[in-house]
Image 1 (cartoon, helix red, strand yellow):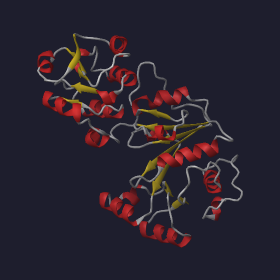
Image 2: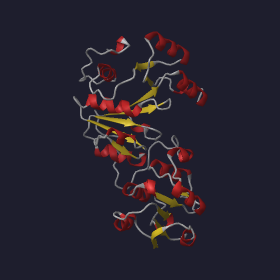
Image 3: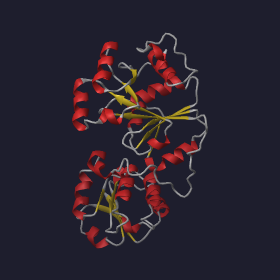
Image 4: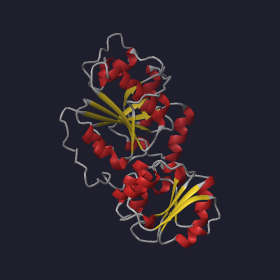
Length: 329
């Protein structure tokens, strides 16, 4: 059964023709909605956005996204310029709000066919703003702990292994450092069954940093977020298989020019030293490190320690490492 929260568009929503267990009409704060529905079971909650007080303030919607399972919420947007602006829509996607529409017929479709990120990726402005919006309680963490390292990891080729690599790096680093691993705008960490791994939206990433300033290292799975400016360093992961590379070049034939002077790491690689040299020559790039396929069931792998040593983590014991480039040993 479904819930409808309506205001301006109550007449339209009453004609949806769906099973409804509860309908509330009026204007409500997010806290009032939390109090009313936090322990209320429903299939989908359809919210007329005008029923939320101060809904044009994206931080109000952020509060909604934190307190409700947004995979079960469908927003009916109004026709205001603010709500339909590229920035507002992009921030909805950043918060994991994928099911929104300006047409009641679309809402009926979304009830049984909810959107995934791919369906709304076109709304997500990855490079349009340098930092995500801050809520009124946020603290600017740009000048955070001086010796804290915030390292971002980004898949350049599809499924290049950023999530698993971050998990393994955390296991190795936490023996000598205080480490936090976080993924932005995704929920893949849940599959590791590790409660210390966190998932946040790009809108709340600044708050996350402010709350974890005591950590020596923050490892960030960037996904498609726009929080790169918070990172001290970014690792660009490429799986150097022929199919993946051909897909990458067809998608963006200037990608290696864009990655010039960046830290490129070959991950899940079967390339030899000679192969790496050929790769560098053909792509016009410099490879920072060449990582083979790694067993995520092993939490002590010399090659990872060697890689971490190359990244500047001096407390990590890299002896016995099998790094392919002697300069990193």
